[in-house]
Figure 1: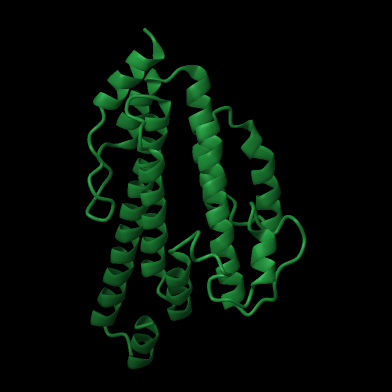
Figure 2: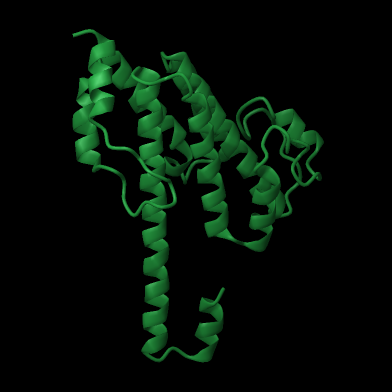
Length: 230
């Protein structure tokens, strides 16, 4: 069966995502998604696995230094066989670099030096305009000023929501014109990953709040309550 027919059949079998922030769980389980992805040819399946691993690189290498992560990303990106996948991976890695720069600056650090503290086209721009609220990149990345404000406020939930929403919208833009091809499969899977991440994050936050309230109900003192409120 030609790839176009198989991929049309694959995508037709997948339930609609629905809105990112209205979901309580992904539209289908990871097991069911993996079963559907069995229709991909071997090269495309390998490309998709590499793309997913690369876009989650920072999460999988929390013990690595920024330089180690950036070097690994620069090494892995050219190995993505599909141009659409390479472009998406590069965009996500540049976004991570921007967020990394915001966090460094919020900690009072000076502009980083060297080639491998981040990834992408904007390293020199970030270094030149380190003191500017959005590094003079707000036109290219409209979410940057709000991300800086949320980081300054310590609003981790708001920041997570903002960043996931920015990725979701970007995937919507690049998916235009792709309906039953490999590009459409990539967008579906990456959006599935976003819903999975958000719903797990939301559950983790809810459990943390429940634990805090339960501890308070069992008699935690006022000093602990002041700490928990932050």
